[in-house]
Length: 109
Image 1 (cartoon, one colour):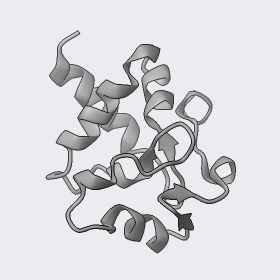
Image 2 (tube, one colour):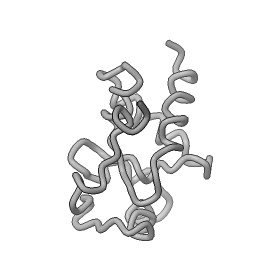
Image 3 (spheres, rainbow, N blue to C red):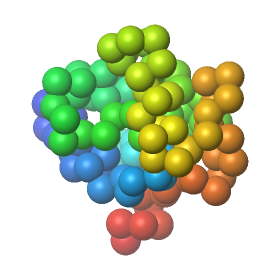
Image 4 (cartoon, rainbow, N blue to C red):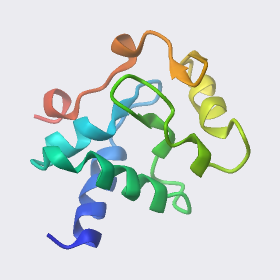
């Protein structure tokens, strides 16, 4: 599969993450039937920062860590964006991750 096609598929899923919810790189990869490609989903999110239509701040690692935060402008932009949506973040980790988790495999059936 070509990288740009995969990235486009990742973006289509990411655009559907609701306000105030988060998902993980792995959950997107699994939904796209490419479960070993969580890192590639991360690369897609990193490449999306010039596109305001893609809520990359809503994609975190499998335990709710803001592992991609260093790819955002400013030190705490990713955290600020999540907090603006009502998601509490402490020590770079989403509080009540399970409560805020959005699983595309369930939600996009």
